[in-house]
Length: 258
Image 1 (cartoon, rainbow, N blue to C red):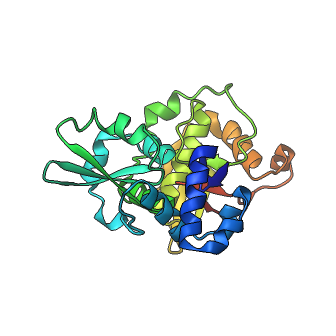
Image 2 (cartoon, rainbow, N blue to C red):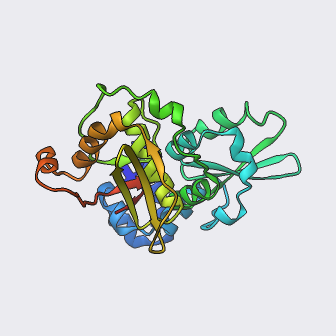
């Protein structure tokens, strides 16, 4: 079974992929399934998927993405399903997919665009992420959302922290929102500070500290503990260090960012 770019293919489809790759380059006929991800380029692999399904392969599509189409879609569904609506041409909706065997694009998009025929093109998973990212919007947590976070609720062990995932745990969702906005604003740092009776965060962009966003003081200890967990630092450090600096890696539309 072949695993490639967060996609898994069953034995039947994996066999079809191996034959297509061998037709392109006879050397690929010697590969085992678990060697494909490291030995076959993305362009060659995705081109094989497209050829098997009789679809065109376009390595770059993000520039052609019509952001207005995404207002009808949940970016989390698009990200997990590795597909994205690109544009409308006549009565056709052009959809970029990474896995042409997946039924999800048709099942998800057909009810949202009932008058349009779905036409697929194959592209790289990274291009789909780039298309979604280019039009994704996030207004940040509202005051009411912050106030609604329960001080006692907390989940641990957010090791691979995906900031484009919807979390049921409010603190995880708060941190994901803050981190996702930091990526969009191209911030180099995020500062969480207490000044008198005020607790806030602010982004450093191009060397300057930007707008301060206040957070209820009751969340300070929980937020500290959550961030220390992500940074793999002991919570006891709060009692020994007046200011704590640290870093951790997030996943933003499948792209690791430190």
